[in-house]
Image (spheres, each protein chain N blue to C red):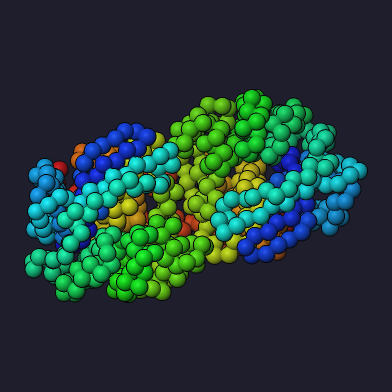
Length: 313
Length: 313
């Protein structure tokens, strides 16, 4: 019941209104795997250069994450430099150095080729499909993507999406992919591309889940101290997919709870730079915040009158 | 237990991607009172010109709304012309003709001076306070405002807010009023200005409720056909305050349900121009959509494991 994720491992340099960090652990696979590791065994397929600090490997292994699928290549690790201004919903990319990621050809270790739960992190959709072909009988395939692939590689992305069960995008990406501003209509269009499950992230406003027959929405956790939003989407997907893998199920009820768990993991992640907050995160804290989400959103349904005022019809 | 509202009655000319309407019923008091009238008796304090169509008066009276407080002045009724582009969250004002509204001096009819629930619609905060002074012993005073009053009349607004129990603003207005980007911090700052209850509207993303001790959030209803967002905020406040007035209570539980009822009324309002959708709205439809909000947001809280994977501590 291992959850396999292919994605980037990066060294991020980030500046936000709350501070600045140089070359800290980043990348979609890092955020995803660490958050999922609270719920199930995780295996990363990725690539790093020979400058990737040993302490990051140690951290992944401490979290029981299998690192055999991380190729070590001579050269430099993928680097991203970005900043956020007052509006923390919008990342501004200042520099991207692909380095060893430029020629990345993901290879799934034989012992993980029977993984039933697979996450295709935000990489070239051609590589996403290439990974998928190495998995024998995946039970549920999740996928993330971004505006770059939607705009400039749409045909390749659509080929990959035909094999995807769960797609996770933000609202702007959903609108771009469906070429439709209304999110409900956009969701319906995307569900026709292949995925049976669609999660649309709305930044600080929360997340919505769409399937053919249902919609579920959870608001954002009311955070007073957002330090660095980097990785929030991957942390969300990690919590969601970790829970699905643990339950070996993706019923609507499991998906709803998984969306909340994903929101919990994202809300902790943004409280500090990189994965720093997660390093000290206990499962009791996860459980407590899950209950807080219940309190945040719950309301009684019994006090509504039977009739309109002044009208007994 | 009459709910008294002071606000504008207007003739709106609106263009959205879904069509165009000329001189239809608009104004904060119209949207508010019609939506509240499903829950309690409502009395409007406002002003119209001698060109205000009789059919609009008839409509308000059909909904059991007391119109004695609507002054009729010679001259033209307040007119607003606006449009919405693809992003329906942002209204673009093309023209505002104050007309008889320019010299409006609100006067509360004697028989309504004992109203316990009062709503100060989005007008000059000096007039809002002037209305409040005419009410003998209000039990709960709600207030709406907008960026214009926050930016250019802040001192007057703060004087009024000192007498307000419930303030309803959107997220941009909350940030502007508190001079703070983080919404949780902004909410806390606003609660220090006087209101004990704050609702922050997030457009299509829903609404949040803040009190000193609690936060409650409800997502937006997933609407496929938003025709005209005009009046959504007033419809929301009408549903919320109508329910509070009916229950004669503002406990957290009543507020939570009221926020959902407000969201229901707003979601219907935007389905057509002006108050057209509300004209055919039944209470059974309100109840059904309230239940849909319950389905939209509910999740179980029992399936979470007791411990982290690989960790029994």
